[in-house]
Image (cartoon, rainbow, N blue to C red; front, side, top):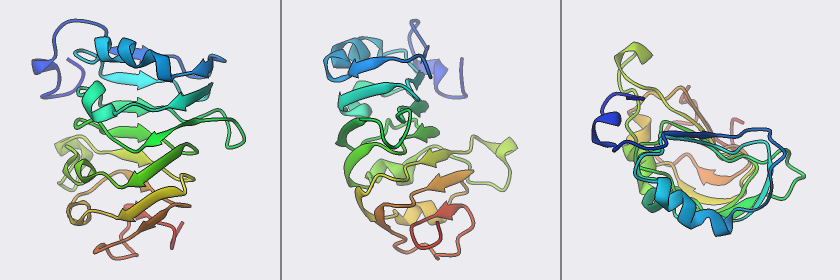
Length: 177
């Protein structure tokens, strides 16, 4: 069991695919069926710091049990994965910076199972990095203001703070980035 309440409902299978900085190159689009096959058990997907490109599939539908997602490219100059922004419903750690994502902040972002208390010891915190993805728009969901996340970086995007005060200490938006 990787995290509380996740492993109980996940069948046996591959739980982690971690290949960061492996000089992987190519189009991720044809791998959607492979990820769909792993979707019933996969909890960690880390393909960061590689040279992958292509269209990102619907993460919420394809990888429902993933809590850790890292797809950021090697550098901001490298080609990157593009597509609509989506997050699996169990996301706690998402590193999607410097990607060519588009769309509005997904509603599920305000419902992620992150720490709501004052200490990470009382639950799992979240790290959500989505900066330098300028085609992301919308407002931060109301429910994020009441939660305590470890870090949310949305700098260099077109996201507004919405109802959250700009000085909110756990939220970094373009205005305070």
